[in-house]
Length: 151
Image 1 (cartoon, rainbow, N blue to C red):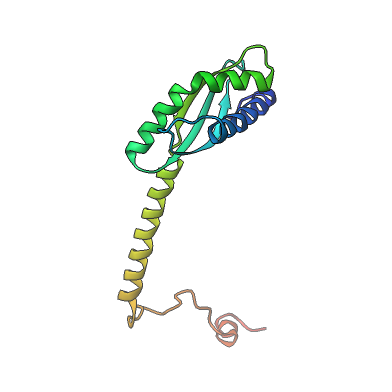
Image 2: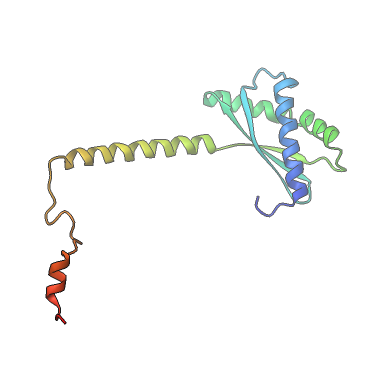
C-alpha cells in the first residue's frame, strides 16, 4: 500500500516476522506445507492485517495449508498481540500470493519470445537487404562539396 503510515509499515513488518517465526517453530499442524510469508499490510487504523504467503507444492497442499492457516489464526493473532504490545491487536487475513504464478507465466512468455527470435534469426541466415544495408549512408566529403557553389 503506497499510502500507509510509517507506523503501519513498521507494524506490518513486525507482524510478518512474528507470523513467519510462529509458523516455523510453534504451529505443528500436519496440513501446513512449506509456507513462506512474503509480505504483510496493515491498514492505517492498525485494525486489520493482511498476510501474503506462498506454498511450495501441489494444489492440494496449497489448499490444506490455507485451511491450516485459517485454523491457526487465533493463536497467531494472540502471539502478535503479545509481541507487539499494541492496544488493539489487528485481525489477521491470509491471502495466497500470486507472485510465483505470475513469475512462471512471465518466464513462459519470455521463453516463447526467445524461441520466436531464434526462428526469425535462422530464417534471416543468408538473406540480403532489399536495398542498401544502410539507407542513411552519408555521401563522402568531396561529393558534398561539389554539390554547392564554390567560393
